[in-house]
Amino acid sequence: MLSASAANWGATPDEVRRHQPADDLLSTPAQHLDRAVTVRAPAALTYRWLCQLSVAPYSYDLLDNFGRRSPDTLTEGADDLKPGQRLMAFDLTSVEPGHRFTWATSAKTERMFGKLSCTYAVEPADDESCRLLCRLVVAQSGPLGQVKAFLLGWGDLVMMRKQLLTLKKYAERDHAAAKQS
Image (cartoon, rainbow, N blue to C red; front, side, top):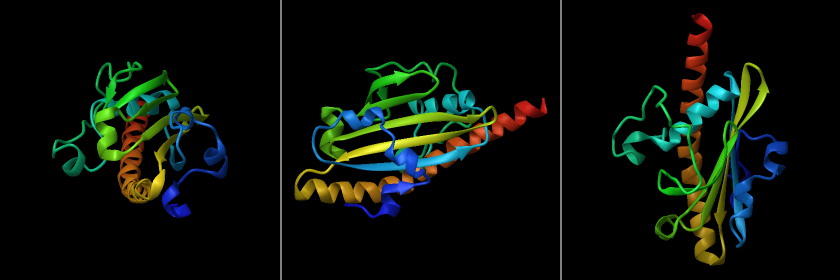
């Protein structure tokens, strides 16, 4: 079991308790890892930036993008996500356009990461801001599964934090630029 600091970064108690589609995809005992950040940009713009995950990982490009820089501008059509589509190394299982999408490991990625599912969501706070949420669900059956969940939780905390903060930065930058024009 992970400590509270690795299992949650930035999510409110209500967000941690809230059900997400990723919760329904694993039948084995699982650890929930919640990450969240407030974005000072409208939910629609933030969702478009979140969908950029279909283009690049937006965390540490040297480690998880083979040194290629994640784009710093929106890619046309990146927000046209469909269930069954590949997102990074995972398969999209559901998409609620403008709000959230969920993925799970495929047989190939399951060998490397174990059984995982994940929901990314954008929830409006008001016209000018929103919450960017991520719930990663990690199977932890058996001693090896528990060790893998523990290690993945800490590694994910570092990578996901960077990813969410990068997406926040770009959404806020674009929102500020749009207000200037």
